[in-house]
Image (tube, rainbow, N blue to C red):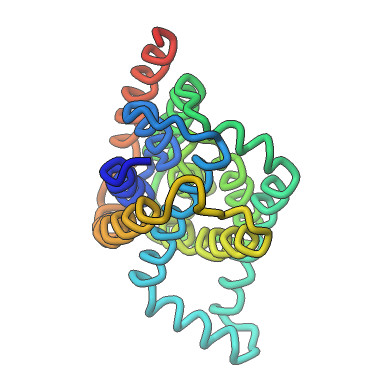
Length: 264
């Protein structure tokens, strides 16, 4: 992978991770446009590294929330912080189950399958459109909601399904407050990504011998910096923006991807 391509893909990841338009889908489209011929395993490795960068940017942006949650958790009391942390853990189970059981099958999907990405972007657009029409409330995420949002996150492991779009939309459609839904969505992915990185490091799956370390480092930095900007902007935007605006974008890009993939 070329250095410039890595930086471009890093910027795409940083910008789209926090916007409900599917970062994985845009990465696959970006690779197809840039002519990235990486095998699926190498392609997935680069994708995971970029997701790790945006996970770190999430930690930086939500550092005060995370410190507060950890302080409440380690007070060993059944308080709001402890319950929130346990809901995060509960929401992780579906994605962990799918990731462990269908890891090889998922890897094969990250190989420039533009038509699949196009259809999944349309699904994302439909979710956002429906969520955009839902009324905003002050309701917080419940235990049952955490499980259902976790299932949405597991489905979002498909390229083209926006993780933030699927989880926020599911939460809003369940009647939860949009701001609280966004906060839960952004925080719930952090331990999942860090766990995935840890697993791959221990198993030796994240070898940089084939694709080189410099593109990975520059892609990581680009994703981290743009992720900081996008996350901060999205927090303020989600309070007043309507999700169906993003659905129109997903519909348009999805149709273009399907047409382009069919003609290729």
